[in-house]
Image (tube, rainbow, N blue to C red; front, side):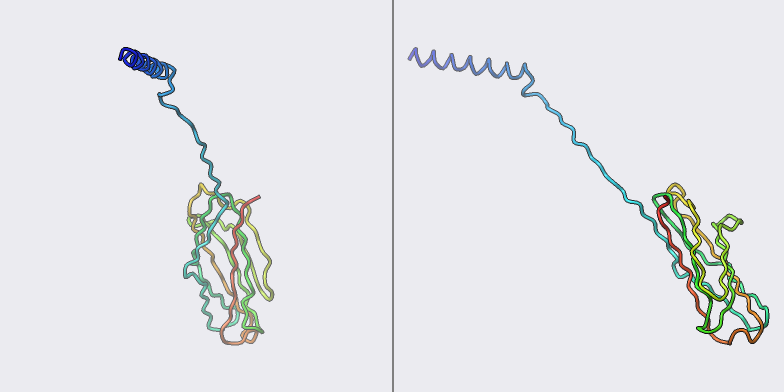
Amino acid sequence: MKRIFLAVLVLSLLLGISVFSFAAEGILGSIGAEIPVKAYVGKYAEILVGDTFVNLSLIGKAGEVARDDDNIFTVESNCLIDLSFKADALTNGRDFIAVDYELFKLGNDSALLTYSTERANGDDKVIRNIQDYIDGVVVYNITAAATLGNISDQAAGEYNSTIYLTVAAAE
């Protein structure tokens, strides 16, 4: 009986001492770690034209000019961008009407770009570094002025064209 009591006492002491030694060394304390977090955001931009369309009404008189000064679109980007503008000739498939376009940033009276088409599709015109992400959503306006030639230079009827807007990350 004494031996059992002595054995239990020795085991209790050993166990008690080992627990205190672990606590003293901090093994039972808190252990921390850090995990890094990384993200990459790609360059992105969006052009919103909504239901914008250029509407030019002409009665057919020689030298007549029709204007449409309210053609709004917006651009939003998360990087510095270039804007490319291109327009097809205004045609019915055989005849052409000369059109002059101007591009404005809303609230600014200075044209960012002037562009003309007469008998052929125009080339791309690029405006470099037009907008950065810090600008937020930017509103632009396109004005258009169509000018008729002589009365017999263009047949009566419908004429069509397309304006092409493209944004790309600036280099």
